[in-house]
Length: 438
Ligand SMILES: Cc1cc2nc3c(=O)[nH]c(=O)nc-3n(C[C@H](O)[C@H](O)[C@H](O)COP(=O)(O)O)c2cc1C
Ligand code: SF4
Image 1: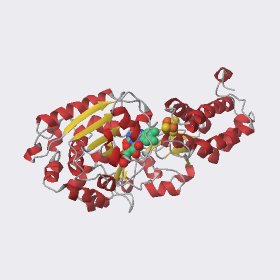
Image 2: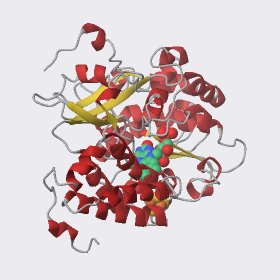
Image 3: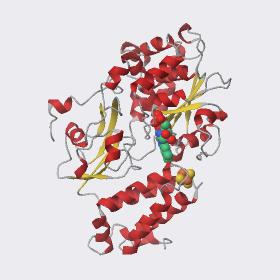
Image 4: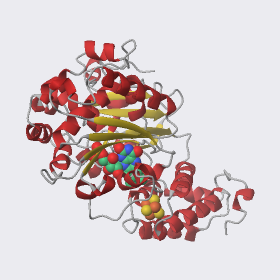
């Protein structure tokens, strides 16, 4: 195991994670002792428009995967329209490898609750929802408890801290469908319908929850708001890069010595993250990795020095996504890993549009054939052709994301496919998996 050098340790910038190891960090008393709800007191004295401007000035970009500028999104909410406004926090976190929001809600739920109150005040919402993944029972319990504590202390409900501002906050558990993380499917699910993406435009900013103006933001995005209010836009921008400001929680998993959450200034490299995480496990050499979950194109060992910010990862041909950095070694098979992800996308496809519903179904079958030692060279063309018909032709990002590991693994690791097809690698799947597959 490697020990990080002091200059690499300095890359750690704990802001959202800074309270996680405090005893009883999830209790309101601990939170209040550690700056908790100070940002809310400050925010309630400011004009809502000034708060939106502050978030714009900070350069905060959404932590849910797409990196959309948060202040701009808040500014889209029409004011004086007479309609109710809603804030909906996306706590669905279903992307394979992604695991930054659940620990945040488990260890520091008040950071999210405080962020919700400030964001709702800024967009003039009187009701907010946190839509949390159904399986995340422990995190939901902590969150509900934190919401009750906040009500009891007068941070939620009527006339918050005697400011005249009212807010009701509801924690809603979903039923555990990956598609309900897509913001419009989430809104349908919250309204009690089957979770399927909506046609856009109109966008949620004007026609969101109950056809009213709605902001949907990720947990990490909203939890970033109190520190920005307290520290200011310049302090936030002192971390990260010019267009990707602030700290980011990088979730490292896979073949590394110390998997976990590493909060660093945006733009840190995988080489530095690996040093922080104690290096690779003994006997393993890095071969491929995802920069931001399974929907982002794979990168290889040659990308160790790519800055992990929105621009740097895009320039390397991938997407920063959810910063779920899954590390695979020379003992892992990129063909098999891609097959397992495809099984997931096929299972989670909501079925609304043909390219994703049918394309993933067929690609799973082609992969099974290849992995059972019965693939042909034409199968590789079929995979690329199918991806071509899914990418950009699907109704939502699930379809696009499903193609990422297929096309990138074929780009970097075509030889691994050929080794199965030409019999140099022993089949990984038995022929039984092919029943009904042709
Ligand atoms: C299939 C799919 C699943 C998604 N899952 C999540 C999720 O679990 N959490 C999340 O915050 N965003 C998820 N997103 C992105 C949301 O649609 C949306 O962009 C995000 O919640 C906006 O928040 P932000 O601007 O704070 O990043 C998903 C998108 C797609 C296409
Ligand atoms: S891309 Fe897939 S998940 Fe998205 S709407 Fe189409 S079928 Fe549903």
